[in-house]
Length: 425
Image (cartoon, rainbow, N blue to C red):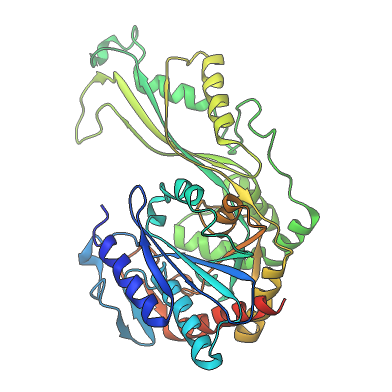
């Protein structure tokens, strides 16, 4: 709905200017971007620091034990919507900058700040905004703070994401609902949709569309080394089984095989279906219309437009050309190199602050227009997506979202240390 977004943008601008960052609010097609910059007295290098200031809705409010926007401090935690995702990250970047200015009297390199106001709705205005402001946002690297520590309390460094497509499939088989006694003669829309869906994916999760896997990027041996070394912390299977209430992953895969599938294999999911009568009791009718909500998860180097075309051809080939395919949202997969100077900086900073190495994740299973995606769009060679919230699970997107105070303070130190370390690379 955008409730409070403009007010939050103005508040963030004021907070940045109080820190010493020259700032402004820039309109987009929907919610504004808050931009700022501060120049170094000595360095010519530039880092683009990013995050988002919008949050998920707080409803249902009754589930909260604390005022959702009250930032309640209790038992070593700060409770409130955005504590972890992502206002805690935003404030950590500002406090790190403030600390550098107070301690050093200068920042070690030029810093540009970019705060998105649409991340929680997948940033629909961002592609056009980046296109129009490419020169303004130019930098040597992108450091994007949106996320938190993993289940083991380690910093994560992410260098890409799967793409996603939200689509609707609609089957219309009659002009009205027909009495069920005629089901010997009339095919209902629900059966037709079920039969069509069975041609798209098998019971083990394999996609059956011709050409679907053709452009899937095969992970390098270095990518697999990273997955093997950190699959337990990135994908704690027993913990997830308990939390989700499941007994196993599809096909019984586990360990490195499961991690590889999550990060490097595309997938198709059905998130919902609407058809016929599903209330209490019975209504003997043949449904005339069925709608399926489907999300398709793509990996580098798959092209969403090509995959959508493949799906339509597939349905036509199998006799389901009458099923309407409607594109709702498309987001492209991407992957940047992770063997870079900004990676070294973050590893050094993590060792200094947390005493441990961060988890390197070449491709994340979800989609978001974050650091690597932004750097690709801007033509910047390197970019990383990280974050200091949590640790997991921290009720992200749920009631009583929190960040631990100790985690927050360490996060400020990590941000400052990463900036300094990168400036020295």
